[in-house]
Length: 321
Image 1 (cartoon, rainbow, N blue to C red):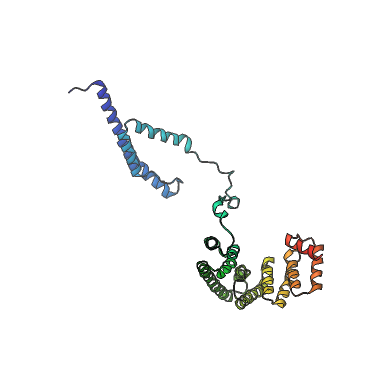
Image 2 (cartoon, one colour):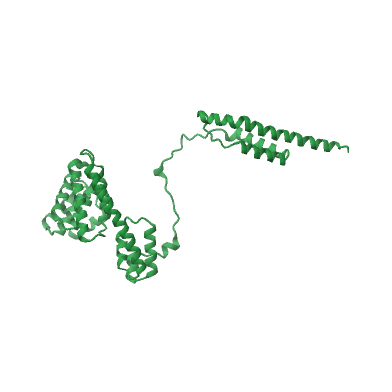
């Protein structure tokens, strides 16, 4: 059987295509892949080794199954890579700063529309709303919402009260254990270090200000916090920020330890005379113990100072002026 001229050309194209595919696979598998691997090990090449022997084999099979079109396609892709995509990108003017990144999360309007505070849910005795509020609190950040969880202990719905008791018990036990560990670290800490005193003051204030412990236990923990603050004051008073002073003053004031509270208020005023908290702590203390003269002296001093006043303090000045 004699083949026509067109059939000869077709067979010749298939043979050339097969030879190109086989040659492409052999060059890639025997030379290119080992060369890239060696460059990567030497650290000269920064590109990741993505083309392995399996990749070259798959491309060769595609070339055989798609004569002419396959080889031309891979050739054009490689040509585009060499001429356009191979050049590095100039990132000199690009600044990657984490502080500038703001993640915008779309609000769940349907959920927000159906959520009410725990206090309101308990007041109206709405079981569904109470359970939903509790689940939202448990799924979120609970450290600052323990006072709301404590309110749910008195809920008539047994399931809500069970959730609240379980979560609150775990968090309070965790707090007790962490305080004990921090106290042990403070005892082992060198005299020139203040890391654990600072940590225990911040950690305890965050929970004690929610007032979720019994009066006896709250009193004990506040004394522990005040003792750590006293030790920090002795070691390095500059590590006591205005916020830490204010936390100690307010916790002592809440347990009606007025003598120690006044001591810390005076220290705060001496170390940070130009901060608002140095005035507000004394005002709250003198108002509580009904020291009228000291209260108005502090109030007048605040009005004459250059300290920036927030809305709460401004309203208090309006009331007593």
